[in-house]
Image 1 (spheres, rainbow, N blue to C red):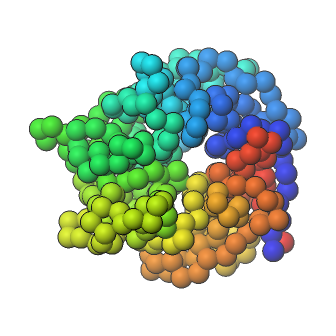
Image 2 (cartoon, helix red, strand yellow; image 1 turned 180 degrees about the vertical axis):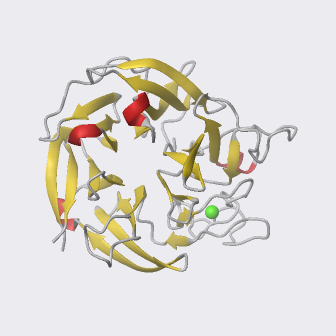
Length: 351
Ligand SMILES: [Ca+2]
């Protein structure tokens, strides 16, 4: 079995890890800090220049990715809960340049803000994926957006960004080929809808966006969101509400709504998502999908065949912490961050 090697500890509720040149890491901490972690695990002081973050509940500084052209443009993207009036907030997406001294962000610009802002500390979604066409970045980003918990019905209407996946240009413009551009009453950033709360997303080897989303009690799902499609929440679900009552129609399928590629019932509470493309763990792991489980505190290795889940394996159960994010590093190894007041950055060592 592979084992966990702690690279860094003392991180407060880390939410995402990205990779910098020369073996450094970029880690978000939910209370609102972004840090460079040195290859030896030393935590640098939080980067200066972040916008104000509405930290609280599930909200805070959440995902971060580096641009595919980072070595040349030093650009990163991050998402966070953005404060509004009073207790209102929503998920926002920002771009910035990492200063060469690795101490601050420069040219910070908010390129998308979820509408409307709403008073909730729940369901921010917030994973960012760079889109590719024919293997090349197309200059746009996907962002998963939660339903804010008590605005669940909004996930079925297109006049808001609750319970959606959106696609925006890296400069904040709306791509003209988004599915609802020009449709009266629909927000043009929307890519797909009927989602609950997606805290894991990645680009698949099949050249498509993959994501998962939390169900309520049961019905966590893996989806591959396609343009303009409806993923069913809160009308259909393979789970039930937390109080045991049926969700929406009480059915798990309905015409015009997509079925998940896979669902977890009971819920594992998934967070973080990565495909392994390297050979570092032997041929059996190459092409597998990796997903963190918050609830049961393990890293899930998912074997797929012909686009279906055929086996699942629990890893890193001995760590004893909630798994928040998983990524493949430039060295071909998997890295995980754990959701804890004393969270860790972990390298998964092969046998
Ligand atoms: Ca669904």
